[in-house]
Figure 1 (cartoon, rainbow, N blue to C red):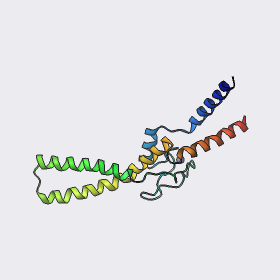
Figure 2 (tube, rainbow, N blue to C red; figure 1 turned 135 degrees about the vertical axis):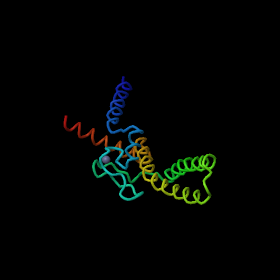
Figure 3 (cartoon, helix red, strand yellow; figure 1 turned 90 degrees about the vertical axis):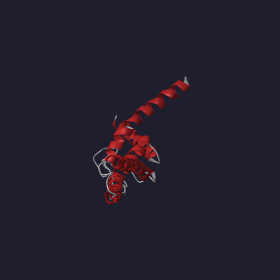
Figure 4 (tube, rainbow, N blue to C red; figure 1 turned 180 degrees about the vertical axis):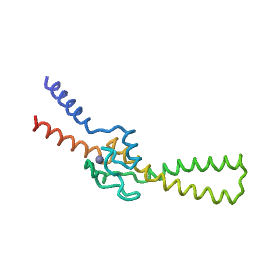
Length: 155
Ligand SMILES: [Zn+2]
């Protein structure tokens, strides 16, 4: 009897906590576009690769993200495949002179890396937010608890 009552209370708390959650793919898309993964309105970056401490629109904290080395690793993986495929294809199909290779591929590699680094970092932060990693989960639980308290006071 006591256990049953306790179980139902736990389930109720969990379902209320679901209100603040964003799924991984939408959160990653928002982060990729440089928007806040939680609300899609605020900016995620204050400088090229500096993530804001908290969202100016919804107040979600981002200072505890830990993107670390993952964004450059993913960028190297993507750009390496694109450039490697490009070199192989142009070499086998077009027979370009060496000076064109030397002028084209390093420049294209640099441009692609710089263009992809911020969006990929945004997507990684979005994923960490959606999965509740590195303090995002604790912050969300705290926010949900305070929302729940407000709701209880109102009703
Ligand atoms: Zn926000």
